[in-house]
Image 1 (cartoon, helix red, strand yellow):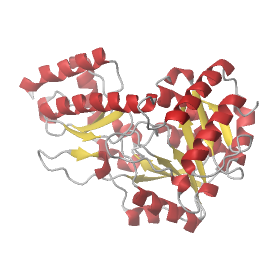
Image 2: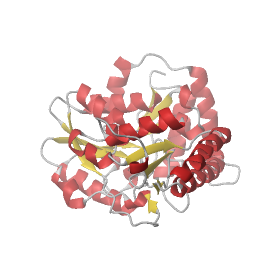
Image 3: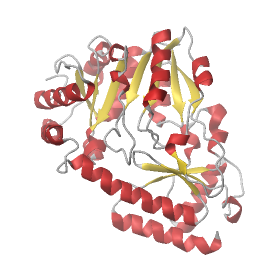
Length: 355
């Protein structure tokens, strides 16, 4: 039971065996962790040695950079780039792309790992099969491990398809995939996460897990196991919780994107996840954001202090050289109660005459 409550480990092995098209050994190829962040921590510490390079895609969940640095690895940054948006045109998270040549230039003999996040926080991008094949081919060419953070795997909207990179040819044996009950079932405070992968690539994660684990409630793991068992039997069916959750979240997403557009911001319409990135450059001159510090931080502070609307400045999701890419961006979360979203939209509507 040291690697997880047996019922939950078996439920995850059964579900992912179906999803990835191969039999997963519950005892050797699944690890239960205290939230997905501990899975990331164990995977990076279990694989990265001092001086090893870890490719991190910007903007990123800040844990990737921090954990790599604590492990004495070296983060190597590459940004998703957004072509210049035209006025009046919608921007999709699919428009945020890696430059293949720039990506290839980041790989060398020191590269140990690349951290992939799909669906992506904070842009909501769902990497296409073709994009994942580019990453996979570089991993195989340079003998690099892929740490695939897929905590938003069930929160995919419209016609987007979540492709698990471990299912691509030659990637099962070099991919560690991370998941989260908190994101899957909207219970983030429970802190139940996991990692799965081929037994040899998961060995370092399992060994590190033994020495850094504190505790994780068996009762919470039992409850999550019951949820996983239910969803495994009705994936894509009308009775699926995940299917209903996506429908509700897509409605919330559309309401917030519409309101942001109405006041002159340009939202990136996310294909998945909880978040919306919005470009505020068209209205920046109408906000009192003079002063020192990154422009996105000043705008977020102005919005919070004067309008009581909270957004996150995303420059903290970039490495030192690329923070300028976030200077006109702000991140909003639409995974909120309808009453909270109603208040947020009211604030945005009140802003419209002044913008």
